[in-house]
Length: 92
Image (tube, rainbow, N blue to C red; front, side, top):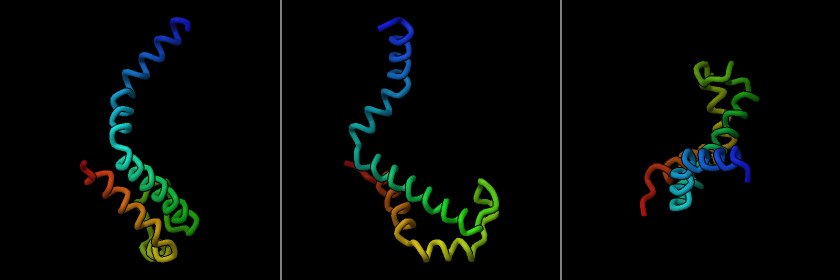
């Protein structure tokens, strides 16, 4: 392997090594965080499709439209709450 390749590999290992080690040691909290992020993304896209959000932030959320999205797909809201709970509170 060439010198730039080895340098890049060492730099990536230095930056992401501790995160990868923690993720390897704690697979359930990582899975909970990923599930919460994906479910949150689905809810956000449904809020955008319903016209409940005007822009990229959640500042101007119309409460009635947001409630209708949550009632139409409650499993995603439960997945966000459960995933975050596992990520934050799971201890071995």
